[in-house]
Image (tube, rainbow, N blue to C red; front, side, top):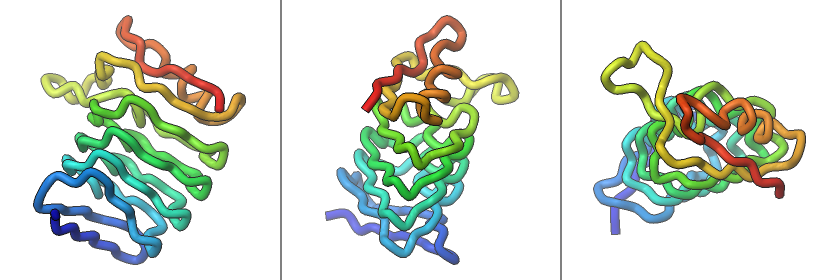
Length: 157
């Protein structure tokens, strides 16, 4: 079994580390924010976020192996690039409580050869589940196509 370390500072999870691949990670209840790059390049498949979390900061899961995530109704903000580079992520459920999703948060990766240019899509669409009229639907509509590639799809829950 992998040893897991959660570094939490003033309610913000600043770093998650594991010495091996982990299938399911449950973030501790004391966490209020998932910080910038907290799960950067983490070899995890599924992350369970507690009801105490309200913000997923920019780059929180950048380039991680995440395939599945449970976002609770307590989350109100998903910042820019939060799930960028998470190419294994195929679907995400975004509750109505989320009122802000930053640019390129889901379905994109950095343009490695030209980082100053707009990011590029994954090459496969990410299915976003949410309520009609929600921020999840708005984000999906705004990010449906890019460079002639299908980025996101929306399904009402």
